[in-house]
Length: 371
Image (cartoon, rainbow, N blue to C red; front, side, top):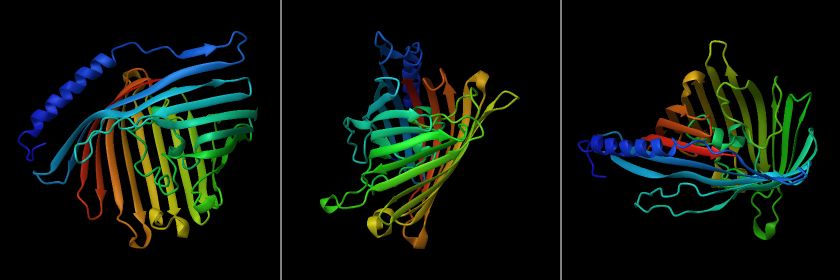
């Protein structure tokens, strides 16, 4: 896009008009019913679904009038989901992903579809207090680590939620392994404990990775694979949790709190806070310097109007000047046509990094989800 501010408003107007037209056509269609096949005896079933998130983005780098503005129209997530049960005790879940399909890089090259397995696991239910998962797992960390991408309050996860993934050779918080989880104390306490591959090293001699999360709720905990986002006024939820992740001398510790509560006056409030401290040790070295991250988000859902204004504040700081501190601020609005099944979000994000130009990002995102 040519530099200067003279032609930006026209291009923004055309882009927004095109997006509005596409969204009005796509989201005007009725929501599909859940796709499920059940065996004649009712003992086994197969459920099919999808998650589609389309985005339009305008990103400005720098603060002067001649700053560059990049424009993108792409698919943030394209996921196919399937799951079900073999019998009353054995269930399974899997999904693929092709993220950022069509998004152009700084050279203008559009991303081709990179389809890969995002999750693939089977769960054996011994009882409510003990479920055993094995496969490609979303590993325990903070609350935001374990949330479903389909029910997020803001436009996306916190920008620093999965920073351990690349150093540990994981993919967006996933790793191969086994996990025990369950609910205890009259369904007020939930635990997760996982043994994972992590970084194998030469001759695969490294010790295995261990991760866990423990949370308490005064309400009833759910034995679900993923934590939920805003219920849009339908449920009451409050949890406080602690987590840890380790392999050799790498250590990470997490603290989190989540509140989703309908007020007597009508609106519903959603609050989330996550804090983490990381130390890669000699094992991960420069790939994960000692640092601290945080993410706080809040939303107020006007249930009758199906609208939620939200804000998300994130950051990370380094010890001993090992890296440059970063901060991100996002302010947005969500319109829930049919809850999380069909929604439109718009947001403005400002990203700051010490010693670098600011990044300002305006995003419009539509979502279609069924499972």
